[in-house]
Image (cartoon, rainbow, N blue to C red; front, side):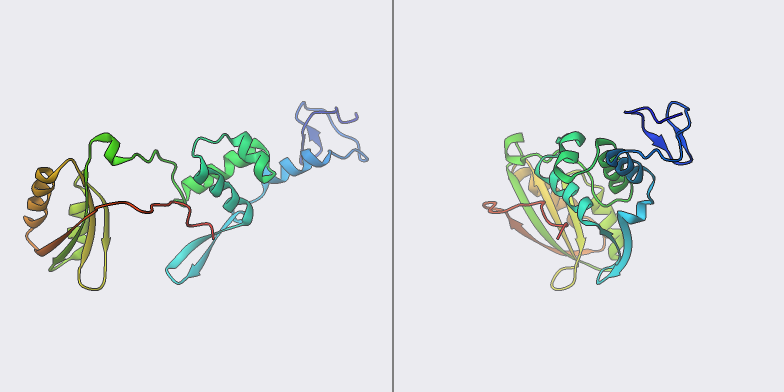
Length: 203
């Protein structure tokens, strides 16, 4: 039986409605493209490689363009993204889910702390002794701290604090200094934000 127009064919000779297709029948280009997107292996889109920072995920150009679309607008529909990058809506959905599952990206709402009543943002440099990762994990558990890194140089740790006012900041500093292995801190109060971007990562 000839292939019914508009019915997606499945590898192996049957159409999605169960009918057989003849030897001479060929799915159109769009059907063939969608089928390849659906069945090809994930590592054709993202593969692991070893860079300067160790094991990392290497994205193909299409996945990079999808990430860029979501960086511009995290609410952009899969259909709109697909139109921009040349994929079907289903193919874009699968790629995005794979990027999220692999920890390559996350889609979140980014708020402006000032408009929500958090008028004091600071970076705190911390010097400490002993197990740095243990101290970092402890500080990461504080709700007011949104960024924790272990560093080289003058400080062992850098943490970013978002709080309501100076009294709130003083309370947080007291809690940080109460950690037994913390030996000293230095606070850098943000006076004005000149640039904050999330567009890196697809170069």
